[in-house]
Length: 491
Image (cartoon, rainbow, N blue to C red; front, side):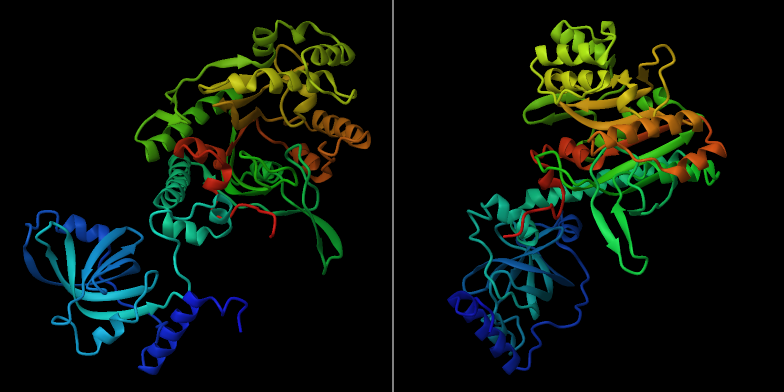
């Protein structure tokens, strides 16, 4: 017996289930041949006059969301919308009224009947046949209060999707955004590829990985934190000059309204391009996604109007810090002085930060939240960007940008470092930082350096966080709203 078999509402439904079986009715049949969905019927019969009846026979299926007059009127919902069912004993087969009495709100049923429009103007199917498709053993939440417990909505997403049209629409829009990104890149001759989710060396980003164990090989493996190094191997191999991947990444870090340990990225690489080309591409991709779900580049997030119309401003990190604080980090020569400046500006530091890490800390504390309209932040420090080419004018910086909207980073891009000797030196510096306690420093990937020694063409690379982009374009306050099954602590 299940732990909640003593629930009286569930007990009533279990009794009905047994009654159905006693009548020779399969409460969970294999299939149902449906001819129409609710939205399609609404469109097809848009011109049907009030009070008019047709001889058109249809078969619809969905979930019962409301019943009136002992089931004579049923609101049937499918994925496209709602259709009213009129179930009168004079129209039904002789055994159907007994079946109708066993229906509950939440049951999935199939209906065969003729289309009409009621005198009140509602499109309706006059039922001539009823089929139980799945007997629901638990009642839905009360209609007018819905599923109010936010955490329960995330834990039981299936129930959230039944009860909350906004949740369904958000996830449908997510699908449209991803489809728009994929179509745009395919139309611009990018080849979609797949790279491993299990890595022997965690690389491609500064992050703590999840660790797992492969029994047959008796070795530790890491859930990937980024696909970058494998994608660039494909460009080295000449598979295509333009590659992209839309897939999961995993980072063993904290949770927040903008962070989930499992998240989705778009990452791409284009040979013979640089980071300025990636800025233009970012603008085009985001604008195309906005058009797909919002109808244009003018959106609203949290009540704030945001204009995604390209082009977007391009400003240096140190320039923005100087503007916000009056401190010019480009005039600071050494790490100790940079740390002192950062502390003076209210940043809590460990005392081992490099010049670039101190600059980044001040940017995060004093600038990020102010970047509401879309902007490309350039001039990232070299010592926090081990995979990017050095800036052509200032060797302390690299050719890298991050794109910010509403105070969040939504994209990150480089002119990719393709000098194998420089790359090895950068990895070795990261290894020293790792030995000094920086758990996010990147380990040396010897095979990747070997791949570079065979020649990676000049290359621009771009990563876009799909989840944050969907949040932005659907006006969703939390990353959990745009992920069907977010990571939660077990109860």
